[in-house]
Image 1 (tube, one colour):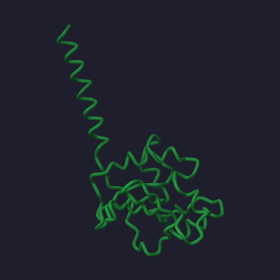
Image 2 (image 1 turned 90 degrees about the horizontal axis):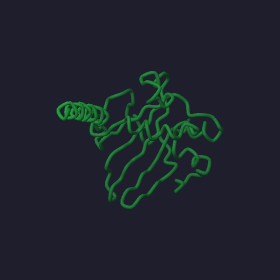
Image 3 (image 1 turned 180 degrees about the vertical axis):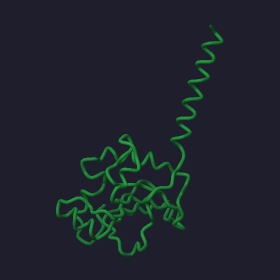
Image 4 (image 1 turned 180 degrees about the horizontal axis):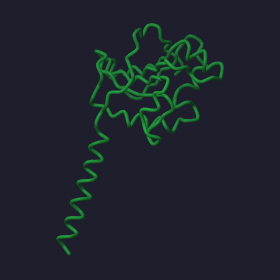
Length: 160
């Protein structure tokens, strides 16, 4: 009996390790780093201790959201992550036609996909995009966006 319990425990532990290990891996997807960051509108800044995040998006997304419409396909939202005043990484959300079909219902965030990039704009494979989807799913009522509510208040100066 003791051996059977040990085997069951070992099997369960292995299953948990495999599941957690699988979830910890980064993945490539359809998100591309925006060609021209200078074209994006820096509409808000979020500060948390030594972390400063500048969040920007396309003029078309700004116009759509101000008009009460969802951002169009092709929209990028970029979070520029600074630590102690130095560029640390980029977080990019991209909305694309059919992007949602790449994931099962449990991970889908409409047609948004997420990716982390290093300062040199290469994909940061140390990050887990499933974690991004999981968190942003809580914002389904605002098209999976955390800071879109700030866009109507934007008057040329980033909202803090």
